[in-house]
Length: 420
Image 1 (cartoon, rainbow, N blue to C red):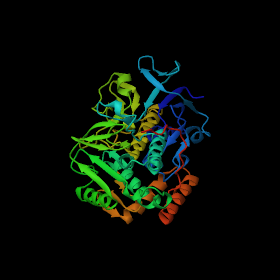
Image 2 (cartoon, rainbow, N blue to C red):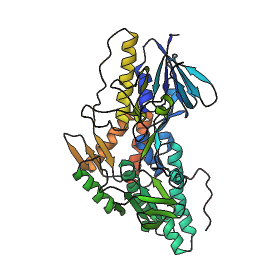
Image 3 (cartoon, one colour):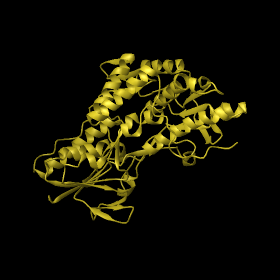
């Protein structure tokens, strides 16, 4: 067993990439995550909207490292770090010592000071979030089928998505297609095509990170799908009865939050500076300031590009950071110079609008429409882990494209149906 102990906290894209790239280094590694699976988060919204099953986008972390005897995987939650004694504290009271620590603990939803909204307006970061949203969407149609009060029925068939970034746009498009193409022939008392999908954006346009022409295209495609977009006014209240958009109350029973993120408390554990979203401010080698043996990567870290703009919180960025940290650790142990500061290579921005349109911005080229959708699909299939899951997802998409039927529509978790 090697003497140098690397502890990696977080089994997301950055953490897994770091452990993968440490293969062959003279280290022993402990991977800690509070869930037993690695999640392909870019497709999480497709679980929430009945396109894919949970098993198609998540894989056991232990399975990744079954042939790596130097890697130990622990199902546990880290609640603190003592950088002086080089220990991480687990929720169960145990302590794990380290020589090098990599924090890749991700982010969760941000409700801008209104955490009390979370029970009625779940965000989308975990499999549990996705299945909760899927259950609520499907139950809304089921309850509407039995409801005799037209006012209550209308509120049941109103779906509000807060935030018009990629997640909000993708959710709105697929829920609209679900209501308009998949479900109409299955219900007798309601016309699911009359469902109202409202996308709320406090800013002036959807997908603000994209070029304005691509943003305009996405807006038009959403409107063609029947999505109602409300710009310029923030949500000021979320409740079980509906949402307040500016000064207007909209009765609805299903709300999805896609408006912001809050980093894990890693910066608080280490008592180091953080940005407004709680991301730890790191140096050019992704180290915690003044702590040469602690690296912070992914959504947990505030990393700046060469031009001073922030590195986006997306999977390719996390993977690049994980690979970079592995290089730094290997160089140090080999007595070689560090590879230099971290440089993020932007590989493009992608978003889908429904099941046959997308936008892609590679910088040097922009794509939109069905061609962009195919490029988007191929790119995501390529980055899935394992041939089996690539085939499974490709087949699911092909079936949906041909039949217009969403196959993952089982309501498998119990939630008390609201009584009026």
